[in-house]
Length: 179
Image (cartoon, rainbow, N blue to C red):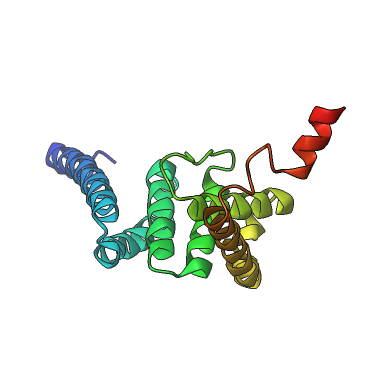
């Protein structure tokens, strides 16, 4: 059975249109990620989440855009943390670690409490060693809240007593110098 030439032309036209549409969708996704990133740095956390949550759903089952999915997960986690939703932020960080396990968060770019929560999620994911870690995030949410509050209390204590951390007043430092 021979397929008529006009059918081939239509099929080729449809496939090229599909490729063009896919490219346009990818550009829209990257544009939305860039806008959400700008919103985060401007302190517009709810607006960023309004943009990121539908994008996260759209990318949920996409195997080809792992980098975009990871960026979305990280931005959702950062925005949730900024709004005080530590459990939701930790869940997003766990899902990010599922996509990029060996990522190193820049400690100079983000607040100490964010870095502590991310490292805690990363250690939890590494300890689990598999993709089930994201499912366990709900049970570990309490642990995230404790970790962040301990980090906050530790930084608060340091800021209240600046001399306690100096080497001349630290007991372990005196012992080292006497030996």
